[in-house]
Length: 235
Image: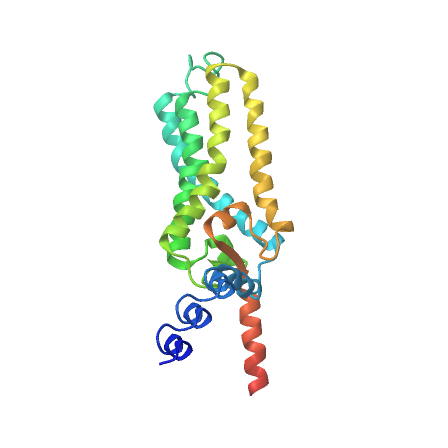
């Protein structure tokens, strides 16, 4: 058999071997990054308006703070006796003692975490979001319901991570130097920027905690309105 025919009948040409074995680099790259496709699909969802998102957050915070202080604060006051004569209101850090710090951290961080994590894991929305017609879904796969991990992770960032710095500076102010309490202002400014990030974030308008958890906030009223228009058109 001639050498040329023997080569064709034996091992395939280098080009054919490359095509039959490993896919071209361009195809590999496209197949290994489905996130970009999911981002485009998520951007097509009806994203929630910033002002309604802020309104939902205020509703949730008001509900948790009202319930939390009504439940936790009387217990703390009864235990440490701040309403009796001879309390530590003017010494040893004033009212900023450890029971009060624990109460504030519980009301402003732990209770909001539980409140939000459980509701997002079960229904994908809190009471405030439900009132204003908003919901939280995944970016990838686009529009899918949150996993339990995502719900708890997003809530932990949103309610615990943002608050830890505040209470660290407050505790330092109590133990070391009163003026360290001004550090709380820096932490609050940073937390505010984490929320405001959604204003200029493109294309999904995600806050920092949404980016870290892989979630977006959608306008569920927009979905329903779109569905109603389609149904009316078909009739």
